[in-house]
Length: 90
Image (cartoon, rainbow, N blue to C red; front, side, top):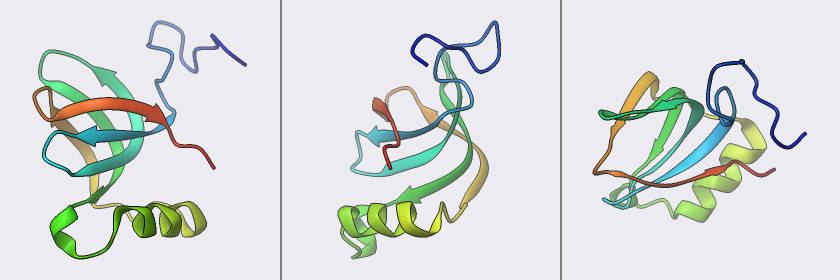
């Protein structure tokens, strides 16, 4: 439902699994908590680094099939690293 806020008083994406595209080329997938001066706060986060040798598309396909391999329970993606944020589409 568009415009529905999972927890009243929070942003629309609060509690939603999102993809954050990093300026460094890293990709972060986790549950969105908030975006503030420090950056984007995510919970249960998987991180893809282009230097890993695994193509991003392959990593995303595996994540969609098997779920997020959690690298960080809570992570703040610094504001200068955090780029576009989108909902994780099935």
